[in-house]
Length: 388
Image 1: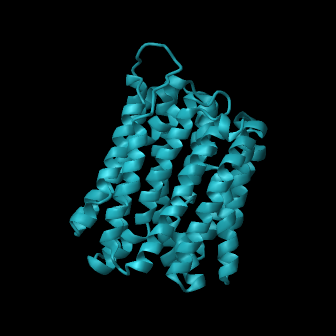
Image 2: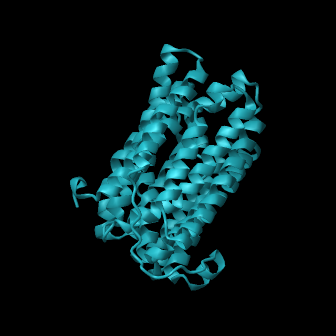
C-alpha cells in the first residue's frame, strides 16, 4: 500500500498530529528553561509538574477510550482534545507566571488524554488489513512535527534571545492549523452492534489472551523505558552543550519520522511481534551504548538508532492491539494500554532518577538495557501466543 493509497481520514489525522507536535515540541525545550531561569522554579517543582501531567494524561487516556466505545463516537473527542491543547499553548506567553505554566501543562495533557485512544481507534477502523502502514504513517508525520518544533524554537531563540514568551505565543499558530483539520474528521464505526456497558475489569476478563500478553509486555517495558530526558541529559554531559543535546533530539526525531512508515508496512508483512522484538534489541543496544559513549559523534549514532527503535515499537504496538480486538472495543483496549504505560513510565522515570543519583549515571542505562534484552528474548522464543 503506497502512501498515495492511504485513506483520506488517515492523512487528515496525520496532518492534525503533525501540526500539533510542531507546537508542542516548540515548547518542549523552552518550558523547563523558562520555569527555572525566568520564574525561578526549582527542579523539584519542574519534576513534580511533569509527574502530575503524565498521571492526568494517562488516566484520561483510559477513561475517554472506554467512553468513546460506549457512545460509539470518536471524532468529537478528537476535536475537543486537540482544541483544549491548542488553547493551553499561549497561556504562559499572555500571563508569564508559574500558575499559567501549571495550568497550560495540565490542560495540554488533559487534551492529550481526551483524544489519544479515540484517535488511535479511529485510525485502526480505516486500516483495512494494513494497520502497520496506517499507524506507521501517522507516527511518522507526528514525529516529523517533533523534529520541526524544537528546530523552530532554536531558530526563534537565535533571532530573539531569551524571548521565551514569544515562542509560547507563536506555538499557538500551528495548534490552530491542527484544530482546523479536526473539523474534517469523520467517525467510522465498523461494528453495528448496540451500545454495551464496558469497563476495564470486564474487558480484561473477556479479552483475548494475546491482548493480555501484549499489555503485560508493553507495560513492563514502559517501566524500563524511562523519560527521554535522561538520554538528553546524558548527551549534554557527553557534548558539554545544551544546543548539541537538543540537536541530537531533533536528529532522533528525524530518523524516527523517516523510519515509521517503512517499518509499519514491513510489520504488515512479517508480523508486528517480529518488528517489536527488533525494536527492543535496538533499544538495549542504545542504552548499553550510552554507558560507554564518551564522544558526541557516538551519541549522535546512538540517537539515530534510538529513532529506529521508536519507529519499531510506538505505532507498531497500537497496530498490534488493533489487530487483536474488535472495532467496538479498540478505544478501551488502546486506552487501557496507553494509560497503564503512562503510569509505568512515570514510576520508571522516578526509579531511573534514584539509580542515577544513588548508584551512578550509568545505572539506569544498564537497568533498562537488560530489561529490554530480557523481554526481546521472551517475545522471540518464550511465548508462541504472541505470534502476529
